[in-house]
Length: 116
Image (cartoon, rainbow, N blue to C red; front, side, top):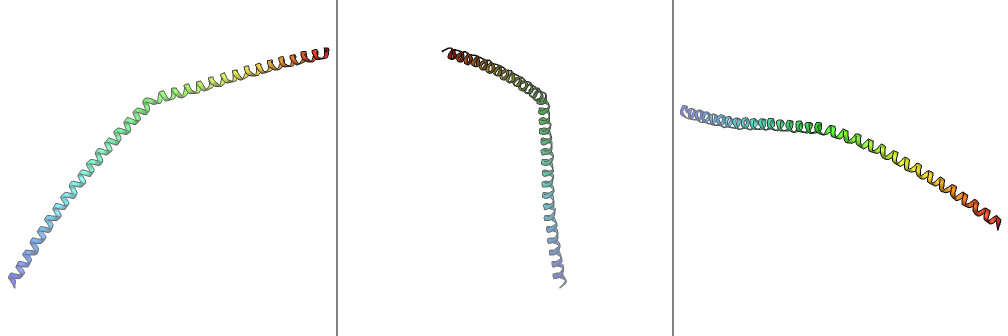
C-alpha cells in the first residue's frame, strides 16, 4: 500500500515537474515574442518619426516657393483684371464712336432724302 502510494506521488511529482517545465518553455516563448514585438514597435516608431521629420523638412523647403507662387498668382490675377478693364473701356469707347458715326451718317442720309 505504501509502495503504491509512493509510486503515485512520484508519478504526480514527475508530471508536475514536466508541467512546470512546459509552462516555463511557454513563458520563454511568450517573453521572446513580446520582446520581438516591442522591438518592432520601437523600430516602426523610429521609422515613422523619421518619415514625419522628412515630410516636415520638405514642407518647410517648399513653403517659401508656394508662398511666392501664390503671390505671383495674385499679382497676375490683378494684372489680368486691369488689362480686361482697359480692354472693356476701349471697347466701350469704340462702340460710342461707332454710334456717333452711325448717327452722323443717319443725319446725312436724312438730309439727302430731304433734298430729294
